[in-house]
Image (cartoon, rainbow, N blue to C red; front, top):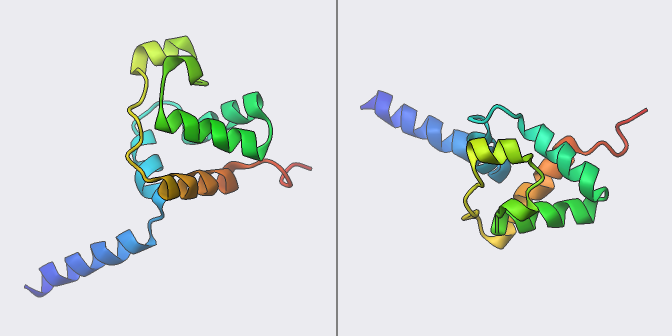
Length: 110
């Protein structure tokens, strides 16, 4: 009994520390052969600035279609186009903001 209460408490505390990005984005991307930072760099290469990059990611996650993906045709042929996100607008914005802060190169390059 004590063990099950302890485990339940542990998982509850762990879930409180996981952010929306870690629990929703990283969890799925771990199963793919391309690390999640590579997607970011592809978006950044195409869209350049923070606002355009974030908007492109959000738009793709809401309505993922082959025509708007940054991934190669061979990647899409092998893994397909992802399903639309089930995150709310605010959750999606928060996840993309965390993603941006984690991988942005601005101010980090010397």
